[in-house]
Each structure stands twice: as structure tokens, then as C-alpha cells.
Image (cartoon, rainbow, N blue to C red; front, side):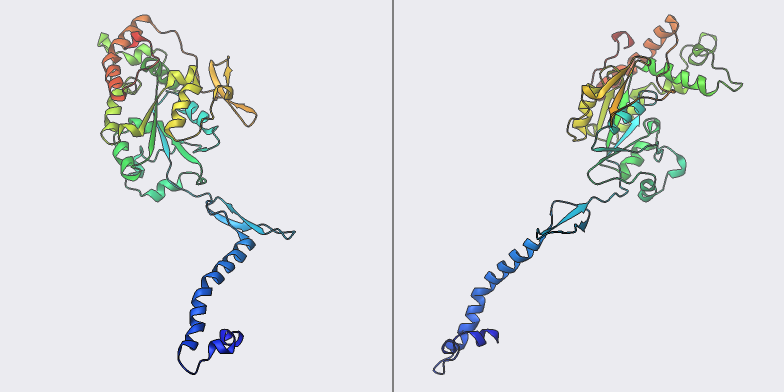
Length: 339
């Protein structure tokens, strides 16, 4: 109707044939795309939205004639972790998590979750697991740490069934040093009880000179090859990044460089981010203008151990250590004599 009102009458009406009334329809078909483009330009000049952003948005109040820009706020949600530190116990898992948490693109779960190594959670669905994790932004790498996972028989298959793409971090150290650290923790734990842990030899050796007692946890937990075999049966090797705990102690930035690459993160945890604690003999991480160091229960000084015991432990762990190097295709900063 509006076309008939404004177009010249001679174009619209032709009594001699029907072409005259076809002209307005043709004109509309030609001009419609132009009108659509004009409307789009007018609309986009009034409202600008960053399409690459995710989350919810809130308009900013405009105090001028400048077009309003809508900014997106990233929503924090509960979601599966991107990576899990699965162990090993007494190998520096807490230090590793502290260091990684200083990276601006990483969010670490503050406590150990123990979802995959406790009987009470077997059979529970993913929502139960997510409820135990912190809320996190979509642009952060979420990491949880539970060293008990590495030692659990059910954890590998149970974890893979729920999180088949999760990346795993495993930190290990000289197995003999790990035994001594485990012994010190047990000794401190039972110091106020009737149980006596005054001698490491009383735990490590079988009675009456029967050799190394491989039934006690502090020995079995250093048999990395046994537990690694269970994980490799389920997870692809490329999804497991093995960290040398001794390298983390003496040169943390080198150890963390490989982890950043494994997690797809930009390098951040460089040498200038670390400060050496001469009292404990460990590095602290610099975060938000302050130094974050391990607690008083970490980094206990090791006692002098009898030379015969060290010799027997080296002999006992030798075969498993060799198998572990084959499983991981790695060499470690452990003394050659411990192999």
C-alpha cells in the first residue's frame, strides 16, 4: 500500500496490460536487501556485544552519546577437573599443588577429595563428585589432589569411567627417601600412643633376619612399578605426566615447565617466582607479593639411617625401579646406587 502511495501513478497503473502492477512487486524485491542492511547497521551501532565472550552479561550505564557496550561476566560453575594429582604419597604432592596454584590460569581444590579411593563413594554418580569440588570459571584449569588414588586398586578404572579425558599428574621421588618420610609421619602420628615407632628397622625388617618386610605400607607404597601397571592398563600413557620429585625440590621451575606444557598453559612459573627457604631446604613460591611455603609438618629433617639398611633397601627396590623407568620411558635424578 505504501509503495502505491508514493510511486508515480503512471508506473503503478497501466490499463493496457498487467505489467504495470508487477512493477511495485519487482521494486520491493530489489530494495528489500538494502533495507535489511540499513536496519542491521543502525542496530549494531546501538549495541555492541563481544561474541567471543561466555557467561552472562550486564549493560554499562551510558553517560554520553557513546554506544552502550555489553560486557560479559564469566560464570563460576561446578565441573569436572581438568587434571588430578594422583600421587604418590610423601613425594611432594602438596608442594606441587602449592606451586601450580600460583599460576593465574589454575584453580586448585583446597582439600583432598578422596572420591575415587573411598569405598563409600563407589557407585555414586558424577554429580556427587562435582559437589565436592569448588566452583571455577570456565577459563581456569581445575586441579584436585588426592595421593591415595595412585595406591587404590579401584581408582584407575572407576576414574576412567567417569573422566576418560582427564589429565593425570604423578610425582615420585627416590623410593628410599619416600620410605623414610613415611616412617617419620607414622612415628609422629603415634608418638602419644602405646604403639612404638622408635626404630625404622623394627618396621622395615621381618623378625629374626627375614629380610625386607614388603607387607608394610611404607615399603609397598614405594613400589611404583606395581601401581603404575594398574594405571597404564586403563589410561593412555600420554594422559599421565610423571614428575621427578627430586627435581621439583632442587629446580622447581624446570619441573613445572613440563607440567605447564602438558596442561596447555603459558609459561609463568619461572625461576624468579621461587625463593629458597634455607631453614627447611625447600623452595617457596612467590604469590601476590608474598612467599607461600610448606607448613611445619612438611619437610621434616631425615634421621641418620644405618648403612646396612640403606644397602638392603637399594637391593630390594632395584628391579621395580628399572621396571618403572621402562613404564614411563624416563630417567630420574636419583643416585645410580639406588637402582
